[in-house]
Length: 146
Image (cartoon, rainbow, N blue to C red):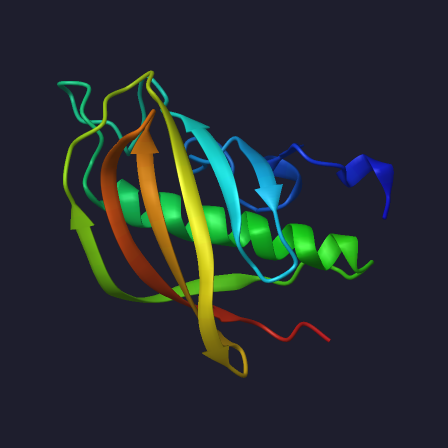
């Protein structure tokens, strides 16, 4: 494997998102099955942060999707492949249990739950320290760029 992609690795090297849409900062760990852990320090401002400093509920879905994209991108880079484009196509379920606020550091644990062809489902938990903030799953379609 290329040493430039030893973990941890900046998510900006693995996903196309840029400020202000990017939420995930770094991929901390990744196994070969499509599971991994990311960290995100919430920005002070931007479309994901409300005027009162609280995180928009939809941002939890985006944290899960970006975390899964970082894992998938990392696995493709490890295999010497080009990182393919992925698209969020569904949200089977998300439960928001607690809110988050600007400046907080969140950890997202994401797991590949399976898939068929170019479609995958990823499950995840979003935490602040040990407190579970959200749990859910997203459906992703990965384009065949070849």
